[in-house]
Length: 300
Image (cartoon, rainbow, N blue to C red; front, side, top):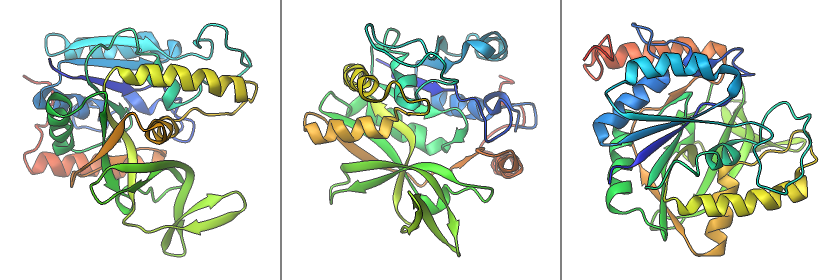
């Protein structure tokens, strides 16, 4: 059975200043998602599921249905504040949903096979999709999930702070813990994260999660249980977030499922801020000049 790719594209792009999910960076109007999907198709994925918002659903579908028709199966789900497990209480006045863990949970009714998760605004590198596809088809199980790890120094924006899941692994490359740090940036030539009122320096070679995960559908049971508890404890908070690294950390602590860190030397870049776009455009042009991609991605 071919694995599925779940693309988290519901982010509002507040720091970026626009709908970065569909902002073109390629010479023929390609988005970062286009390159990820192209690589996923070539690596053997059989279906794409997009998590989007109702506010831009029509525009998003119009863009991707046309270019992907006949190339791969496509489904869409929406992430909204009111989409919570039955009986859960929350503040309806929230302006946005609860983050990546909540977003993945939205796809529980349309994924029945091993699947990968990626962010829409991150370029993960062509090799990483082949690495993940092999893992999902031959190794992934309810006892072993996976994650593609990247070096922290290769994932920092020059234009502001970023959020990263900082990983701790054992000698066999299994994840011991992953902590979401929501404000990481360069400080005095080094990399640091803000912990309450102080800056804590961190090794620039640290392995971080860029939300490129490999799961079986068992994850949805973990998500639903933890999200229900999360809402009971913090559902009345206006800005509480339900991040997938926190979910994975609890799964590891429970001991039923381990998480293998898949090493990849693939090139990563992203567009957290508007100023990051020039670097993304230059990176894609370089890959085109090296023959990795054609100038018109969907010309076939």
